[in-house]
Image (cartoon, rainbow, N blue to C red; front, side, top):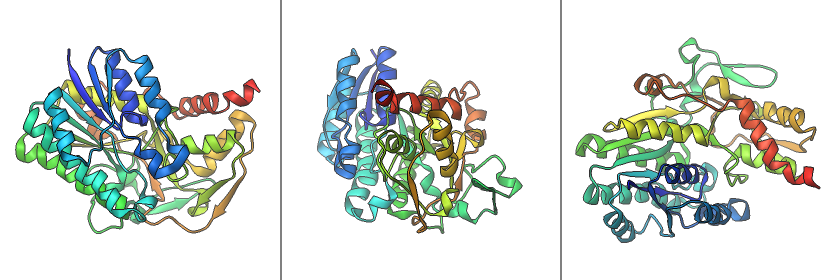
Length: 352
């Protein structure tokens, strides 16, 4: 039986990975100590997801360890000796990072180093999949020429007609402390591939989404905005007139990319991973889609203060990953993603 360690296993991508590899007959060891609740309060609590994994998965084992604990991480990897490590655990909010800089850096950078070194020492042939972020590019994408339309901003430079690719610089830009800690982790993952020859990949994610997300105001915007709409919570849009744009990729399509890499791993690989231009949407467009899908008018206000280091427009150029792994496809369109959220978020209202 193949073995995989999944960190952040009760989070969106981690839980999707745990279910997927359990379904393939792998032994799955999930590492998650529910720090998302510590970061984001009740909205971020992932206990429900852990309980579902333990109930539904045949060969799932949970390890509630802190990835900052070097000895515990090393001992776990030495015991399991996995064929793959899928590292999704993180402090994911660039706003929160400024208030908890040591926790942010220790979770994102030091925790990643602990996992890399434990893997090198105990399972050097394992593939190491790291869920990085597009925030490694800082606010550099904001320097691309933009055009403003009624409901969104968009790139106005033919060089970026398909989005941001991996050649875009990560230096000389404002990242937020979260972005900086993820840069440190991203570069370290690359280095363990390039220096030690390990099979590592950094997936620089756009907006990762799906109904398994424990969305909170500071992280997981699409999940949280549907939650706000369904529960009649007031929603605050921060900056850029609500015309800021993100591309959305469903968690199942992220796992498809993991599968493709694990089938043909490389050393020190880096890929941007998102929904691409076709799956891009602004906040104003999101609010309109929710109204059209559900008939519900979200109560929202605009805070004109732009978030520090925030992207005005970001969507992913997927050309490099599609070139190296041509069998991979996006299976969830933007319409399908919104329909899933509407069905799940508004199910209790329909029942009532």
